[in-house]
Every structure is written in C-alpha cells, then in structure tokens.
Image (cartoon, rainbow, N blue to C red):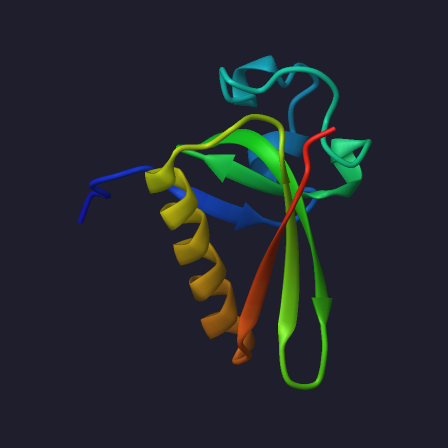
Length: 107
C-alpha cells in the first residue's frame, strides 16, 4: 500500500541512506538549509521526509517511557507533523514503551 501523505521516518545514525555517500546533497530535503541540527549529522539519528534528510533526533529511554527529541532543519506542515507523530508511534511499538516527542528549536 502506498502512503497517501508525507512519509516521515526516524532512522538510526549511520543509516546507509545517508552515510554511504561522499556527496550527500541529493539526500537533503529541498527545504533543508544551513548547518545540520545539533551539529554533525554523521553522529545524529536522522529524520527523513519523503526519503530525504530534514533533521535529527535523539532518544532517552526510561523505565516507563522513552523521549524522542526532534530537531528539524526546516518548517513542516500539519500533515508532516502528523507523519512525524506516526513515526514516533511506530518507534513506541518497536520499543514496547510510550514515546513522548519533544520538538527542539532549529538552530
């Protein structure tokens, strides 16, 4: 089944979608500008929007919940925010824990 809206994924650091290439410009979302959120994107987990990098994320896992802090390099629409929430729900299901999403300001 094909997605009907934007597709957001929380990918791990060193994901081959991004890390395997010397020139990564094609992997950056067209709205991405400036330096990577949080510094060096090679050491951050990646947020992709429709298959292209648009931000980073980090996690904190506790005994009863996990927190996902997301920092995006560009503004996102309401439907893209919903897709991000769906990605967090998928991650929560994987962990077997509730996940709280925190949006960090862009740098």
